Image (cartoon, one colour):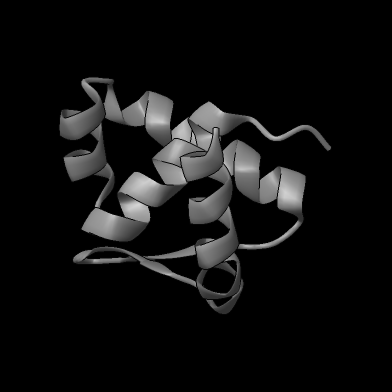
Length: 77
């Protein structure tokens, strides 16, 4: 599996802001494109990284577990 920094940066934006729409504004990208990136990440990882709620998105247990490592890898790049 390759490490797609763009997808993981979106993962971090959503994790930090709790919302696809906020991440889209910050990244200056359309929300559907970011949603597709996150869906692709979840398929690649074979697990849910976020739970979608009426108030946005929250990290799943897996998302919480990998968050520190993803943050470190993205910061190292």
